[in-house]
Image 1: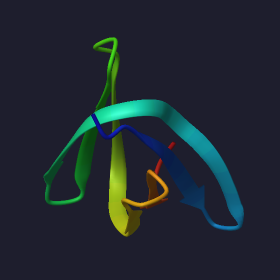
Image 2: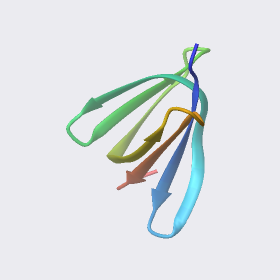
Image 3: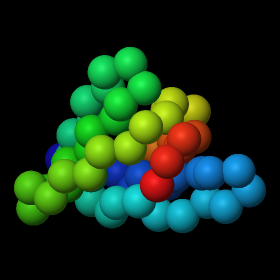
Image 4: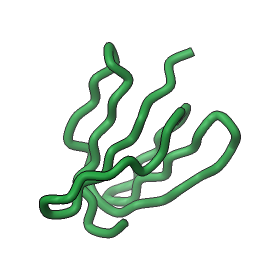
Length: 64
């Protein structure tokens, strides 16, 4: 199973939005992320980087 840590960046600040993410759904600028326990968050923005080897996803957020 491939799980990822999701980082959100708003202006200069980058923070961890969610650890152990198992699913990411994108609909335009709406990004819905779910972890292995079923917790779900929704952010507005754009995915800027996905590193599958290191399990990292970075999102440029328009809100947090």
